[in-house]
Image (tube, one colour):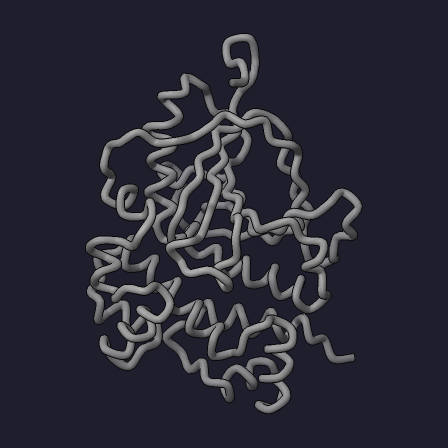
Length: 284
């Protein structure tokens, strides 16, 4: 029996892990072990985007992280993200982000991204919110948090293959380790989809439960590459201003819209930090 889900997961993992490799339709069909003609139709029917669209999107998002989090030259990032030269990289990146890589790195894009990335001090809006318990269908990721996209691609492949999206309630990234004190290779996280208690968990996914309780919640608008700066703003400004203590439970990100449907500057992410509750830490 042909397992289309395994082939889809294999291909999206290959794209994410090899942005500088040969990601032509022929090469991806070989990874899927299907004919070029049939794989193109299968991929589009299961994901809603062509292989070429998926490759451009994943390459651009990986490049965006490198532009923000490394001092690599634009030429190096162009090469690492699979482009022939800086010119072709700039055209492709601009089609995804609306600005060139150089502008993205130096000034950011509309929204909160620029403020957080430059570390400017300002009032950070947040709220203390009682969140309900949340059940996730997830896959674990170990390593750099900005590489968790590979795990999200795997979870999405399962939901695509089994047509489970009608039961999905949004994507969530759960972060179990402190990146300032844990070696990058040992960072633990989960990429998941919110599901109902009655959802039948696929055997290839793990159940993760996020407990109910008070949380500090901050809304970030902009590309995912700007999220590390947003986390710094929450921990460095919002949390101290709140007078509340974080609990030992993992923090997480709630992704409120879909990067395949909206431009990067319109992405909405809620950053959620669980808080201690008690007589000295009353909910607001």
